[in-house]
Image (cartoon, rainbow, N blue to C red; front, side):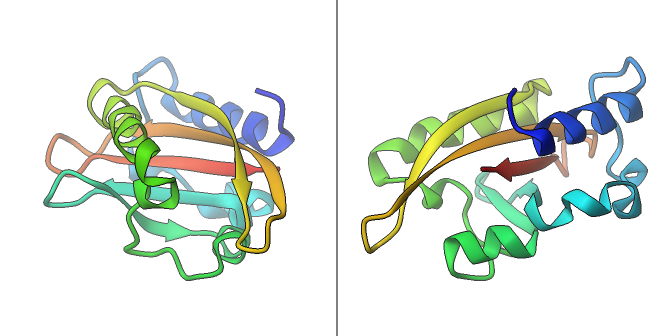
Length: 137
């Protein structure tokens, strides 16, 4: 973990969970992480079992050039990588695993940027799995 935003969100999440596998969604207070909100997101598993954005910060939406709420998380990756991203997210939802990854994103005009993604499980029960995350550059 290298990015300041990832480190700060992990520390906040770790404090909330207080030894449990994951904190409850209701324990997350946006005011506590207000300096990170532009880069944060909450994902939930939809009825098809796919990770979709429930909330996404303004900077994330700007990175991807669209409002991300309701949008498929794996679809942000190339088609050949979507199955792997889906499996990684299932680990966050089902096993309460922490996911940390770095990746390189490319714009339509050929520019690239490196990103760090951190996804942290939230306890929403089996019916309503969610995770809190951040994408930093």
